[in-house]
Amino acid sequence: MTTNPQITVLIDDSDLHNELRADVRGGMASHPKWMPPKWFYDKRGSALFEQITQLPDYYPTRCETEILLEHSKDIVTAAKAHTIVELGSGMSEKTRILLDAFHNHGDLRAYYPFDVSDVTVEDSLEILTQTYPHLKLGGVVGDFTRHLHHLPTGEGRLVVLLGSTIGNMLPTERAELLTNLRQELKPGEQFLLGADLVKDTQTLIAAYDDPQGVTAKFNKNLLHVLNRHFDGDFQPENFSHVVIWDDKAAVIEMRLRAQKGMRVDLSALDMELTFQAGEDLHTSVSTKFRPDALRAELDAAGFGVTHHWDDERNYYTLLLAEAI
Ligand code: SAH
Ligand code: TRP
Figure 1 (cartoon, rainbow, N blue to C red):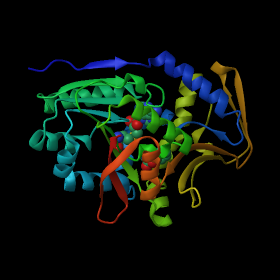
Figure 2 (cartoon, rainbow, N blue to C red):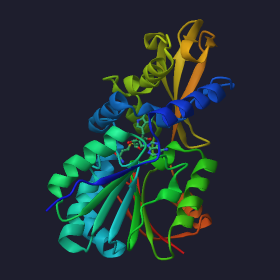
Figure 3 (cartoon, rainbow, N blue to C red):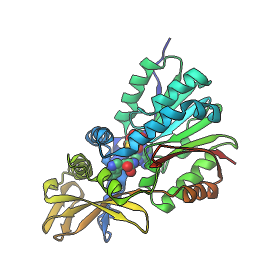
Figure 4 (cartoon, protein in one colour):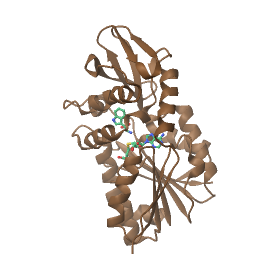
């Protein structure tokens, strides 16, 4: 027998709208202009991200899938979890590899996706309910940078964060996330973290600048989101998708560059933005990690890394850590 999964909604549309307004007021008044990356993921943005994961040049999803397929039994043995909570779960596609492995080799009882996008949580749960009738399912619509104190409870938790989403945070934001997460967990509870590694520049850039232009569309989707929320008149075609590798910081920077001088009206905010020709709006970072440095970040937050699994080419790593 299956029951409908319960979804805890910590942000509704009006909270989202207010938060986005605050981010616009802060970010668009800064030099350089910037916006936090969570606003890419409305319905259209989430669908575009799914397309990114299929692109020939976007290796992270394939690497992570390869690691999960290759080592799922070892992961289950090492993780011993009864409850999985997944942050930034998206459509939980790769997670199914884990759920299947736990079904075959472990004793998993519950799975909770936790994502800022309500449609994503609803859609993924609907699919999962049909495939995993033996699992207790529930979900959280929330922001993992603000709502970790609402982390679902359960016996023997494993918190999962895949897709190198950790890399979309700045160092201080990462430290805060890891520390907050550690505080929510009991000693011995675990954290499975997927992270993209430093590699040759060409491979890195190609993953974020595909010839099909899907990543450009995803990046520009931010402007559509702003237009819709604030009755804006951004013309996305007047911005170009720019990808820069900052070797020193080991960060891919995503920007939108104004191709000419322009004014943009956000009527609902009574706000007029001015862009100089060539001016960049910073939209996201995607940090690439060195394994030792990432372990040190986990250490500093009170996690001990017990296992790691990498793909054949050492492009990507999956770390299993334990709350100390
Ligand atoms: N885990 C999936 C999806 C990664 S895309 C994968 O590996 O393919 C990043 C996901 O994180 C999106 O679904 C987005 O909605 C979610 N997300 C981004 N920022 C978030 C935040 N601050 N809080 C909760 N979810 C967030
Ligand atoms: N976590 C993904 C990554 O860093 C998110 C991502 C993929 C992304 N492509 C992007 C973020 C383009 C912004 C722009 O790889």
